[in-house]
Each structure stands twice: as C-alpha cells, then as structure tokens.
Image (cartoon, rainbow, N blue to C red; front, side, top):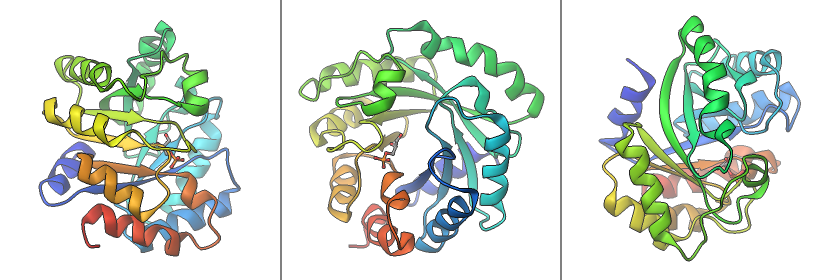
Length: 247
Ligand code: 1GP
C-alpha cells in the first residue's frame, strides 16, 4: 500500500497527526527519543526535514535512527534538493506556490526528480503555501506571504494546487510561529478544496489543535512542541487526542 493510500484510508476514519523532526535541531539520540515518544503518544506519521542545507548523509542517519524505534511511516519534508533519501517511505514533492523565486516553485524539484525516480521513493505532490508570519521558511523560500486577513488569496493558491492535480495542500504559518494559520482562513480553504488539507506551524497546545481541526484541517503537523519538551510523550498526547476528537 502506498503512503498516500494509507493517508487517505486513515482520513476516511479520522483526522491525522504528523510529527515533524528537523535533523539539524538535535542529536541522533534525541531524534530517536522524539520518534519513540511520538509513536507512544499515537502520532500517525513521522515527517523528517524542515531546514535547508541538510546533507543526504544526515537524512540517512536520521531516518535510520527513527526506524530503529518505530514502525510509523517516514515522509521527507524537503527544504532543498539535497534531502532525498532512499531510507524514507515517501517524500512530499512540494512546490512553494507563493514563492517569488522559480527555484522554490520548480527548480529544486527538477534537480531532485531524477533521484526520486532512481531511489524509487514515493513522491506525494503537495502544494505548499506560506502564511504570515512565515518565520524562517518564509524568508528562505522567498515567499510572497499570504496576509492573515486575506483568506481569499489562500483559497486561490489552494485551488491552483488542486487544479494542477496535486494530492494535498499544506498551509504553513512557519515553524515556531507565535500564532497558527487563522481559523477563518483554514475554513475558507477547506470549503473550496476537494483534496486533504495539512495545517502546520505554531500549534503547541491541545486547544490550538482542537481549533485547527474544528476549522477544517485534515492533517495537523507539530514540530517545535516535541523538540522543546522534556517529556515528549506527555506533551504530544493531549494534542493528538484533540486531533482525534477524543477531548
Ligand atoms: C513546520 O508546520 C511545521 O513546517 C511545524 O511547525 O515547529 O511550529 O510545530 P512547528
């Protein structure tokens, strides 16, 4: 079964939580500890990536350490074309639709595509849209940020993703954002979209997770909350429960 079929199958029953691990943010042993604790807390998939400039070697080692502690499927969340690792189960083949630079719309992708093919990794086409404040990825990706009070622009880009035949849309406020994507924007996008909606950036509490799911997110991504927590499982459990509608 492909990872995309697993995502759709799971979405037919419940909302999904994904844990993002940035290989550049901690040691391999801490990476493994986050993955183990996220698994225990009930996360559905592990995403690896985030920063730019991560080497393939680090990606390989990071995914090996994750796979040594969990059977959850691992999806690459690439920041650049150097992050394609055959150790992963799938890769978000993303286009940063609201970047001012063609590099982030299709340049990195053109360089990565032959490796994705050669390694036989499952590419999952995702339209990536960055909303204010955007944080580091907004700057490095040269994003023409969607304004928080402009849901219609988010809807327009999301429809571009759908009409291009992409499998999912990812609304991103930026890792560590003080506020997540506004509820009103999530609802507006979800209302028009026929493909799953991923929401991430700035979701650190059970309340925030409940809000974005109620607004219309199908998949909730959290990263920072696990990296900053002394007890990852304890931090993630209420968030995952909220995503699953158990609270
Ligand atoms: C970043 O959406 C993810 O791409 C996760 O953001 O680190 O703020 O949870 P946080």
